[in-house]
Amino acid sequence: MEAGASSQDANRASASLDDELFAETYDTLRRIASRQLGRQSNKPSLNTTLIVHEAWLKLSRSNSERYLDRSHYLATAARAMRQILIDHARRKLAVKHGAGAVHLQLDEGRDHSEEIDSRFLELDDALRALGEQFPELESVVECRFFSGLTAEETASALGRSVRTVERQWARARTYLAEIMEG
Image (cartoon, rainbow, N blue to C red):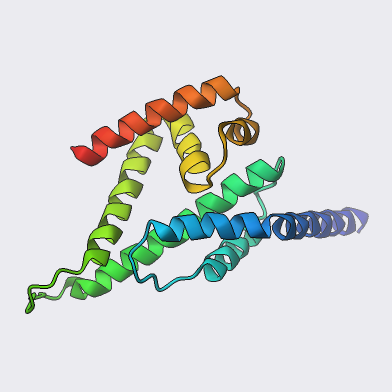
């Protein structure tokens, strides 16, 4: 019986630490969400608070993920926010395209938000391709681009040297630019 009780105590303590991390980083998480929303269409149907809270729910449901420090937590939260935005953009484009129905453009005005959403999805596809070949570069992009972490914070979150992170960041940007242009 004691083993079960100590396991519950450990889970409660871990949840409490996660809640403390969330409270401590809330403003930073809102800035990350705002930055990510800025890359979306002009009329986002999501807001920063919704994204932050959805990410927190996603992270709190994941019992397997424990955070080494604040930077690691922010990097993981940024990945969750990215997934939320990608899922949302995919749903939005599916609806705009009639979810498989034939769509006729009757007016000549172009909806630029659809173009931005599709570019965001292209970036996600490029990042996935990068991650398949070079997972270490994908994690650097998530920290630097999506989280807005500095090279020093990224190095701390990933357990790498600052110089390594800087080299990987330059390499990842080059790789992604080639994929996106091609």
